[in-house]
Figure 1 (cartoon, rainbow, N blue to C red):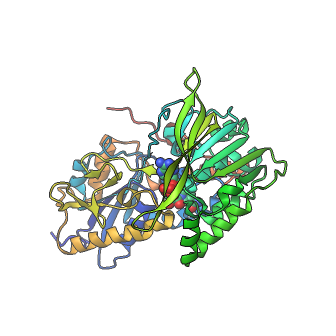
Figure 2: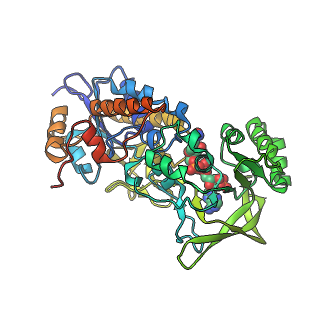
Figure 3: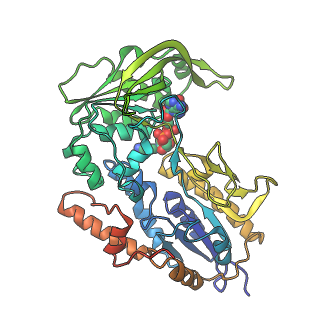
Length: 472
Ligand code: NAP
């Protein structure tokens, strides 16, 4: 047989996870003109695009336009999409070894970091990531319920996810009704009784993880005043010095914006959002029904580590915050994939520059690669995954050139389709997705919205004329 990577014997690559990283990895692979490569991109959902569809806030449509690039990648004849196919359930790593020379795991970070304080298991305390997935219409979260009869809500953490959650809670029904927020969320939020939102940062304004445009946007909400306690808006001496010593104009600008909200009088808007700094939740308390009623917080001070970063340290100054609903937004976390070496505490696949590493031998696992959040952890914006995927693809190309690839027994596209036809006949192709996409967009146009999302797998399958496969 001819050499792998040629027209007669293409390099066959499976990518698991059709988020931005999966598409970027496919794009990088296709750029190698001396390589003939065929890519099959799998996702457990029928729909592609991962967090672009299920994570990016519905009122941030511009960010979602990156999918145009992914559409172009998908038009390549060497590219196929297999949605509604779950690794570990519908197909195994061993099955993939039968069909592919190389496998990339780009499954993202599917859960969140837990807040380990007393009372954290009370009702009405949720991961922000659940709320995000719910309002974005992720099928797994469609039936989740959040008690929006509560008037006072806390969001713990000051990253961009916390900002998204706080902003969606603060938007009016009219603002939300022009977005592609899931219908069930629009309906629930239109009845929301939320009046006060507290966004809780454990460090100071100069260390807030959210970005400048996001905090600036808060000042433009139609019916929510933004407030910062004047004493918490001021930088402590260590932050002041660190900022003065650095050339970081971005952070200085962000601090200026935070300070512009300090002590602001109410403009009579019906909701109020207060950003708190240098406080950490220490305990949650509940009523007889086991629902949160209030949260104890401790005032922090900052200290410099040996590495020079400023970390929070608790003082003995406590306070109580009355809240009936709490979202923790302290970071996403990756979940292990069966048979793939994993670092539990970091929530990432063990890897070296994208090559999956055997936990004992520390040697690369033949044919196995990783990219995106499951490779490096949940940080960075969508575009950060492009260079990340490139780094992985460079290792793959080196390994291909050196003959370090798997030896599949069935290295051809037709055998994969035959496998899926017999094991998971209701898989989604890219053409199916395009059909679904067109229906969603047409429904949206009729309502002056970007799209109206399907939010169950059954509805998605029915919309494109597929039947749900009966489990064997
Ligand atoms: P993040 O940016 O890492 O923020 C996590 C926040 O949680 C930080 O404020 C962190 O504080 C805080 N935190 C962590 N552990 C805590 C604890 N035990 N108690 C209290 N606070 C704690 O994570 P994210 O908000 O989940 O966002 C993930 C990535 O997606 C980020 O890179 C983000 O920029 C990106 N994203 C971007 C957009 C956008 O571009 N619009 C939207 C959403 C997400 P410390 O800093 O003190 O650790």
